[in-house]
Length: 158
Ligand code: MHO
Image (cartoon, rainbow, N blue to C red; front, side, top):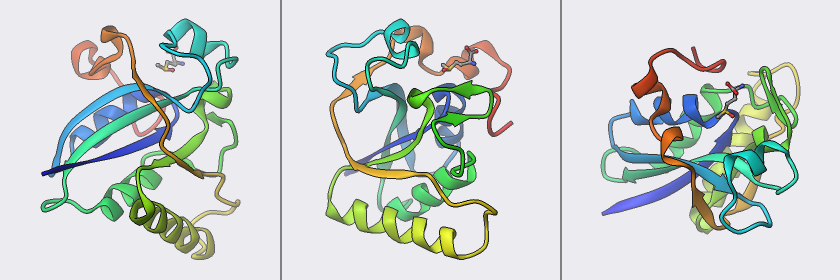
């Protein structure tokens, strides 16, 4: 059985590539979530006017990797203290957010966030939001597995 997890951590190209590397992650696709326009396009989302975040929707085998491990990887692959931006990419579409699919995911996400916030890992407070999952709109095909197909890397996560 596969479960679903959804994360926003800046430009979705690099985030997708990182999640795909994890054992137990069976699928990952990039898209937009959390906004107020149906079927948003990349151009629309780029304007920061639709309210959407660039996200990665991960399918995983909970028998091989736990949701909590995914949350920890999410924190590692970006800087969660940045507000409404990630590295050179600025705007609310790049904000740090965990879209949770049930109460168990919410509890795990909030627990890990609190632990890292209080554990002295970061010099600044964690800005990551934990919000209920909204409609996931799959991004245009040319954005799927972008780095794998094009080579190169994103500004985050090397
Ligand atoms: N600065 C990046 C953002 C792309 S990401 C899909 C670029 O335009 O190359 O938002």
